[in-house]
Length: 355
Image (cartoon, rainbow, N blue to C red; front, side, top):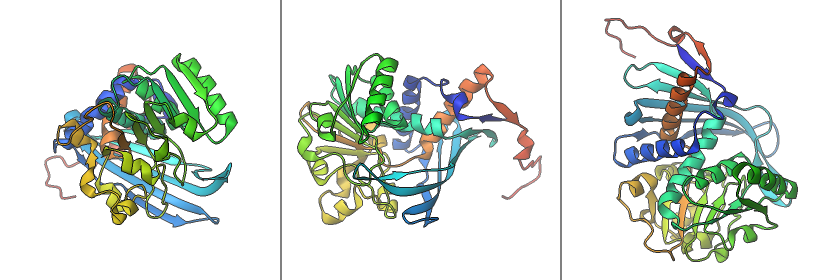
């Protein structure tokens, strides 16, 4: 039987610490040449209204260590808007995102899952894995830009790898950052305070996490201080050139690590592509997280270095690792509904079959 899981059924299934371990192992396998990740493929076209676009996306990858292959697809509409004078990309209306989990031993479809909660978990866990190896061990204060779902999981994930005691959160909308601070203070038990500017959130922080829907840079290099670690999520492509970091952030970073380097060139990702063309940064200066975990590139040298992790794309290995964990937890607890496997299988028996 094929397990079907909705977002609400997965919300409390997988502790963040276990998710971080699963993501770390997936990237370790990728860096060792064992796991496989296909570049993200996107279809975009202008749609409905000025600034609007229809968007279809697919991501796939396999992680042999957990005998899992995953395919994630999504279909959505987005548009560019102005919020408090800043450009933002929003996704109004309905959204369909699915993860299909396959077993590598049997080739069978194990599960079909909503992707929203899985995505929130796997993105935050990936950032946390990078921070685990790049942020100073004594990091206590996080500067957080953004107040949405991903901002919440960034806090939860970083609390699992560093003893944070304070988070300063900035979002352009005052009500949003104040609500975020109230709710997350109650949830985490640590001090979370809303601040009036991105600069105030960044200055004096040990870890800076940008989890925004911005189009233009929100982190300025002149705000950075010795020993900071910066993590950034936005990975805009040539169709939608989005940046969270200004030029000086890139030049001040002594070490730059990304999730998946090929995607930078395939998508012409705005954060690096144009800067590579200008010679501001060289391709050899960009290292992959999998290489960091396997000792193929150096990590932080001292407590004065500024380090940067660009969580630049969704990756199939993230979905394979996370979906397998969700599947196992759901089976243990008897959660979810089921569909007959024969709806999806081509039965071969002992006959030769060529797909």
